[in-house]
Structure formats: structure tokens, C-alpha cells
Image (cartoon, rainbow, N blue to C red; front, side, top):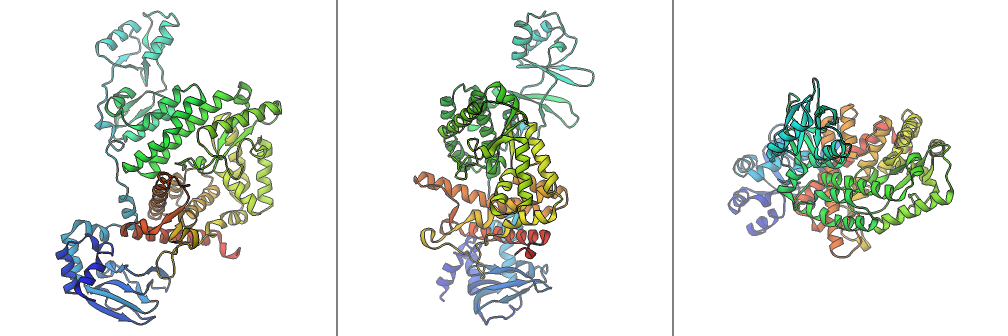
Length: 602
């Protein structure tokens, strides 16, 4: 190869594309080409850095276990140069690679920050850094202009307190009790004083609401907004490390500075009075997601936001359509990706209705409500579930006792359909109505499954049912035919992590349904070590981000969004990180296989 050819090749290999021409020339001037036959040890890794031109290399630990594969355009091994890797590297087939002295690599690392970052960051750090953080959402509460608190003693008269409120142009009054605080808002003054004809000479403490929701100054603005949405409130109190109130963050404070931001869809949902009004809001969700994604917001944060809005929409529909008997005697639940709070785009519905045992209602009334609920969701753009996991299916609309009977059936009759239904049910999340019914069902599920080691092994088995799309030489194994050059990122990487974590969560009676939160709980319980937990979180989010980006592209092109990723559309850096993510998936599959002894089931 000529010097020009070598330079051209290096520019296609990450991270060498980050180097300047003069830095690349320094490598080329000191590069030699090496040929090795199959099954040879790659020599002198402490003295040279290697870039594969042709062939494949396997890394093995001291016990002979295969740790990693490297294919064309991959490079190795920085840790050996630092004396931090005792593993050996062997050729899998005939190999040709470039190599240059380690001192040149170390020199370039010291000169080029971006180039250095590739080597100095761990895989989880690389995956984490790829998602930039938006300055708006990731501003902290302390960086936002909020109001100083107006704090008065509980015995001060309502008249004097309101007078102070007017003088200081405050939007609320903080009432101090001996061991706690309360809050009085304009709404409280209207309802509890004017409409109730209460004397303004009475104590302000008589009408204060003691259920104060607070955040700390270092809380991200995004999380403060989500807190307001979740609790349906227009302000949060700010407390310092000594639990002292230092300010009040009002909805109006945020709107004044960020009125063009999409997070305030929740306010519109609250004010909606008809399905048609909800449709206008729901239709705007796709643009909101596009905006958040374009601004670099982490995918798991977008999921959190969309989930909160969806929950409010589901609640609103439930309350618009259900009569009081249904509200008091049933629990609306969502399952699947919606139950895990991981659905961003409207891919399908997974919902059900748990009825109180003994609740008597006209079948036609219940059927009519169920049909109207599903039709309302369809009107809002939520497609019907292809598997018919919806209120309109009596199997997913029945008394608590019958849901328990279904779980009993799953544990005593292991087959693919039962395992699928159980996986769906494990992710249940109560939305509205008699929510304790959902908690009772979850408790029963744990009671029947969590200590049943044999059953848990069968339940976890689908974790390893799909092949990770990496070939023997460390490259991507893509589809043929209609999806030529693409890979199914759900089967290849997303599903194994979600289902494996779901299995561990059932075993450990974790009530969280979100996969990221489940991983954190498993780390807290020492089921998974902290570093591996972080790798799983970053890998899962990276794969979900790639899928979201591809889905948004397909929507723009008027195509049906799916789980396929076009490998050729990825940058070299993204390809590198996707390979690393798939390696982490394989590591997790090995963990699940060993934990549940899955080799004995196959």
C-alpha cells in the first residue's frame, strides 16, 4: 500500500479519524505491515499498537477464556502498552495488520484530547458521553430565577398574611409550625376563605396545606418539572441541606423563561375536557419527542417524560368514560413497554382492568366502557395491540381472583404462550381506580414465583433465545433479503437485557417496573456489581437511542417504524460503541445462563 492508501485507511478507523494530517503522518512514518498465520500469538503488544487490515484476532484471558474479538478496522491493545493487561491475543485466521511503536501512540494521546478520550474512557463512559445533555433540561434549580419564600408564623391572621403576600408580590405563603411547614396559595384563599366565608381574622395556620412537595437546589430542572407533573401541582418548595426552606419554584417562573419548551403538555392534559382536546395534545407528542431527541436529551429521560404524559392521558380518559362504580371497584393497568415506562412512540397498547372480587356490574356496561376506552386511545393514535392485550379482551379484564388463577396456571403449565403472558403481567403498572388491586396481584405473583428456582429458569430462558448480531470475527452479522445490511437491535440487544433484568427482578421481589430502575435496585442488592450495572444501563440506553433515531427517520419518510438499524448509517464511533454494547449483552447472557443454569434446559 502507498502512503496515501494507508492514510485513507486510517481515516476510516475510529479513533484515528480524530487525528490531524500531521499526526497521521507521524504514525505512517513509523508503521510497518505484519503478516501472521492462523492460531499465532500476536507478539510485542507492550511495544506496538496494532490496527487490523485483514483477518480477525481473539483476546483470551489467562484461563484461556475468549474475552473479545477484533476484526477489520479494529485496533488493540492500549492496556498492554500500559502494562495493565495480561491477556494474550491470537489470530483466528490469516491476518495482516499495521503496527507502530507504543511511544508514538502515547505521544499522540498526550497531544490530542479527543483522541485521548477514546483510550482513557471506559466503555460505560464512552457510551454515557455520546448523549449530550441539554442546558435547559439539565440546568439545576439553583440556576433558575425562583422566588424567595414568604414565611409567616401559624398564628398570624389571614388578613395580615395576605397583606404581606401582596406587599412582597409573593405567589404563596409558607406557614411555620413548631416542627414543620405548610403552604397557602391563591387557590387556598379562594376556596378556604372567600367561598367558605371564613373570617380573615382567623389564623393563617388553619388553612395551610401541610403536604409540601420539595426539591433541593441541586435538583435538575427536568426532575423538578416531572415532580410537578406527577403530583399535579404548580410549585415546589426548595429546601437546603439543613431542611430549611430557601425558595419556591413556581410554574410561572419556568414558563416565563422557557415558554417555548414542550414539557408543559402536561398542563394542557389537565385542562382537557374532551377526547378531541386530548387528541390535539396527543398528536403533538411526536414533535415533542423529535425536539427532545434533536436537542440531545438522553433517551431514558425522554421515556420518563413521555410516560408521565401518557399516564395523565390514560387517567383523563378513564375519568371521562368510567362511571363511579367502575372507578371505585376496578384498577386500570398498563403493561409491556408502557408498564416499564419505556415506550416513546405510540407502537401499541398493552392495558388491562383488574376488578374487585365480588364486584357486580352489568356485562354490557363494562363491555361498553372497555370498547369506548380502547376507541379513545385509537383516536389519540395508540394502535391496537396485535396480541390483543387490551381491555376489550376479557382475558385482560377480569376479577383479581381470576388473574391469580392465571398466574397459578402459568407456574404449573410451562409453555411459550404462558411465559409470554407472564412476562407482560410482570411489568404491570397501576394507572387509576382502586390501585391496591394491582399491588395485591403483584404480591401474589412474587409469592408464587420468586422462590421457585426451576420455574424462574424457564422464565429467564428467552433471554438467550436470540443470537447477538456479532460474527465470529467481531463484525456485525446483518440480515439478508428485505432487511439486507440491517440488524434487529431489539432481538440482538435490547430484549435480552430487558428480559434478563425482568427475571432477576421477579426473583428478588423488586416492585420497580422500569428496566433502568430495576438495574439500580439489583446493584443495591448486590445481585449485579456496580460497574457491570452501569455498563448495562449505558449499553441499553445507547441501543434504545439508535432505535429511536432510526424510527424517527422512518416516520419522516412515511415508513412504518420498526426495530431494524442500518449499520451503514452509523458513524465509525457508533459502530465501535455498538460492538461494545453487544459484547456487554453477551456478558450479561453468560451471567443469566450461569445464574439460572440455563444450559441444563437446552
